[in-house]
Length: 439
Image (cartoon, rainbow, N blue to C red; front, top):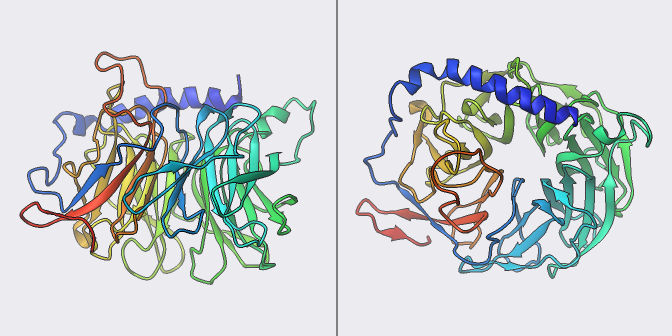
C-alpha cells in the first residue's frame, strides 16, 4: 500500500476526531441556512444531456474554447477510466463529446488538467496530470481532435528499481504558463505521493520538458497547484494546496522563486486542503486565496500590504462535512467574487454531497444560497468545480465532478441526478422570481 493511502487513512481518522471537537457547538442545532426563506437572486439549471452518466470524475473540470467557435468547452479526467475527455459547448448549453485521440493505454486514475497553446500553432492543447501515471500532453488541432506528445512524465529524482520509484510516478494536478519569459509554456505539477512540486521547462514543441530544481518542496504530496500573478508584478507565481497546507511562491520571470506563505496554515493533520483559487476577494487591489478544507469547509486568506496572509472569519458555518472543490466567480453581477464549492453539509455518509453557492457580501461576510438550483445533497463523493460562462450569455455557469465512492450508509443507493460530470447554466431572477435568461 502506498504511503499516500496510509496517510489518507490516518488523516480521515484524525480529522473525524478533530471535526467532532471543532464542530461540537455547531452540531447541537440544525443548520441555520442563512437567507433560506428569501428568493435566491441566482438560479442554476442542470444541463440534462451530453455529459456522462457513468464514471468517477476525480478532477477539477477545465473550461476553455478548444475549437475556436466562441463557446467554452469542458475537459475532465476520470478515475478508473481510459484518459481525459472533452465536450464541445454551444449557444444553448448542449454539449457534444470530442475526445478522439485522448485515450490512455492504461486506466487513468483522475487528477488535474490544463489548457494552453503548447506548440505555438494557434490551437489550444491539453496537459493532464494522472494520479497513477504522471503527466501527459496532447496537441489540439482546433477541431476537437487530439494527438499524444508526452506520456508518463514524472520527476527524475529516483530511477526504476529504487524502492521509492513508484511513489514518484503519479501527479495530482498541474498548470501551464511561461515562468522564464522565453515565450514557451512550462509545466508545474504536484505529486500524488512523494514527488512534491515539479517544474518542467518547455521548448515550444510540447514534446520536450526539462525538469528544473527549485526551492519548492521536491518531496511530499498535494492536491492542487496553479500559476497566477499573486503580487501584481506581471510574473507568474505558484499557489498550491500541499499536504502540509496552502503555500505560495513568488516568481521573478527568470525562473527564480521565493516563498511567500507567511500567515497560511500548517495544521497537524496533513491533506486537509484541496481546491484552491485566487482573486481580489475584498477589493483592495491585492490577490487573496480561497481554499477548500475537507473538515471545516471553505476558508479565505486575505493578502496583507506586506505580502503576508490573514484568515477571515468563518465563511460557511452551515458546512459541517467539509469542502473538496472550490472556484471563485461573480455569480450575482455585483462586481464581487463569490464562491462555489463542493462537499457536504453534514457528517452523514452516503449520497449526501452537493454543490454550494456563497455570495460575497463585503463587510457583511458571506451568504449561503440554499435555494439556487444547485443540489445541497444527493450526490456521490465530489471532485472539483469550475465557474465560467459556458453559453456566452453573460451569466456564470457551474461545472462539477462527481461519481466517486461514498461510505456505506442507510438511505439512497444512487445519486439524485443521472449525470456524474455535471453542469448548470446560470440565470439571474427578478424580485418577482422571473428568470433573466441573458443580458
